[in-house]
Length: 191
Image (cartoon, helix red, strand yellow):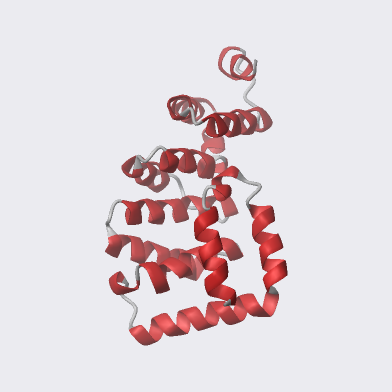
C-alpha cells in the first residue's frame, strides 16, 4: 500500500507523494489530503510547495475557501509554475469568499507576473471581466490589458492550438477542475 510505504516505512519520495496526492484528490478524500499535507510539512516540506496546487485544489473542491487562502498564502512564492498556480488559487479563494477587492488586486499581480500562458489568461480574465468593477485599474487600463493579452495569445496560438494546449494542461487534476472557467476564457480569447 502506498500510504503504508509513506507513513509507516517513511519512504517519502516525490513520485510516491505525487501518486498519493493525486489518488486522494481523485477519491475526494479531503480529510486524508489535509493529513497528508501536514505529514509532508513535518517530513518533506519542499514537497508541499511542489504539490501545493493539488492541495489547494482539494481545499477548493471541499468548499473551504478560507483554508485555501491560508494554505496558499503560507507557502513561499517561487519562480515555478506550481507556485504560480498556488497564487492563482489564493486569488480565486478570495473571490469565492466575496473579498473582491483583494481578489482583483491579487489576480492583477498574477496576470502581470505569470509566465504560464494559461495562468496569465485565467488571471487576466478575472481582472478584466469578472472583477473589473473591483479592480484598481481604470477602464482604459482594463481595455488595454485585455487587448494586450488577446494579441499575445493570438500571435502564439490559433484556436485549435490553444484548445490542444489547454486540453494537455487539463491532464493535471488541479487544472481539470477549472474546465468551465478555461472554456469561458477560451471563448473570450477567440470570439
